[in-house]
Amino acid sequence: MGDNLAYEIKHLLPAVAVFSAYGLPPNRSGFVQCPFHQGDRHASLKVYSGNKAGWHCFGCGAGGSVIDFAMRYFGISFREACLRLNKDFHLGLSDNKPSRAEISARLQAREKEDAKKEADSAAYYQVVSGIVKRNYGFAGRRFVDELYKYGIIPQVEERYKDLFKLLSDRDTTEKQAMAAAAIICADELACAWVLGGTERPLTVDQISEFLASKATVSAGDRGYKYLCDWVTQNSNKLCTKSENPNQEVLGALEDGRAYIIRSVFERILQDAGYSTAAMISYLKQNNLIVTRGRNNTRGKRINGIPTECFCLVLPPVDLDDEDALDELPL
Image (cartoon, rainbow, N blue to C red; front, side):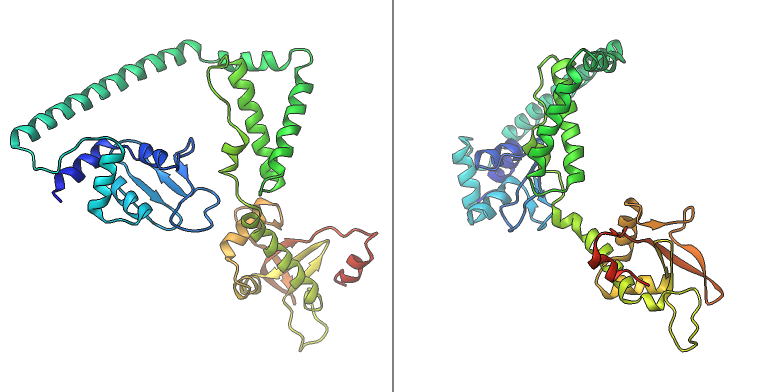
């Protein structure tokens, strides 16, 4: 097969149109669930806009042109993919090699089309920027004015609760469900009050595609619980000074916090298969370690020697929970 047909297909067929026609319409951000690997629950395949852009999956690494997609999707050869796309999209292209005059004419036509698109984009930008400049600051004031009308806030609160319940039923965490519900609620109000209903607001299905699953988020939770269990199991080795010279001291326990020697802390996580950097980031984000300025560690005297330690905040103990009291480090 000559290169001409493939060249024309790549430049005439937008990837978005091909994916949509074959039952894989991208979401508003251009992502779709990858059909080439299993377990792609959060749509990791990006379909780029434009005729030449193509597609790429950030999960399995597959990607390429619309021809590459047809080859993989239907399990066919390069030639068969070109012929199928030509037929399915009624392109009416010929595999015959064009003359120089035809090539020149097509290039000139494409250059004119590109120039027109660029001019149209510049004109559109001027129009939009003019609207923004003339109306700068009005949208926010209008939103607030509408929000404080009598009886509106209770309605907004009810809508937020409904959205939160819908999102909580999805495979995501409570924290993410709260944030997503607030975003959708605000978008619905803005579309109604500011945009006058000319735009469609975000939906629960659309925003759910960008929420991390419970399993992903729980990696940090599991790591924190692992550290707390380690503290319980090694509480006899967590003391500022040991009376037994032969006993190993790994840190200290004080006021609901476990001071773990830096090298010990890093070894615990590495031995358990956790990323030290990722775990520290999670603990800091959730205020589960006490830091000193920009440093992740705090100084503590262990056996009379100033030592850099990670200060882990231990979970509060329910005094009515007898099992928890039994496990409390002494």
